Length: 169
Image 1 (cartoon, rainbow, N blue to C red):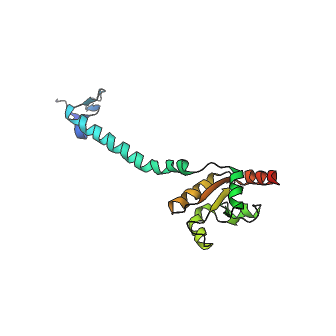
Image 2 (cartoon, helix red, strand yellow; image 1 turned 30 degrees about the vertical axis):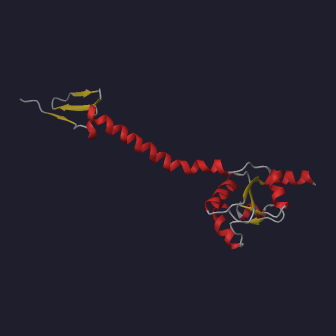
Image 3 (cartoon, one colour; image 1 turned 180 degrees about the vertical axis):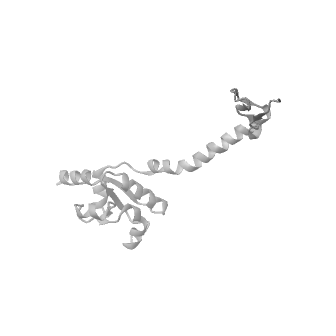
């Protein structure tokens, strides 16, 4: 009786992965040492470089949010409002109805660019954005910057702004 065996084929680009050999006698032999052929090394490095470049391209825009947002200083935000900046509350309508700063316009952060157009607030109009904590206002600010708005300020959270306003009285 002849022994027949089945071996997995070589990995593309010259890499040999561990081979599994199944004998008809029921025993399994595993070659556990992967071998890299010299001609495949260059191609592997090229694939790694392309993967790294793709990852940077995908994730770098999300890192730019933190780089373009000014600090959330409630006193400075209120000063901008005193100087004529529009106050935009980017929380949900329910949150807005439960309490908001006097004079604020409610534009949910997901609709910020459309909302600015609805209220005829152009790209040069100074605006101070706020939400509950400053995160959504930061997202809204980045959307406005991406749409060409040049005078935006992330005022941070509603409670911080209320405390700063009350401290100024």
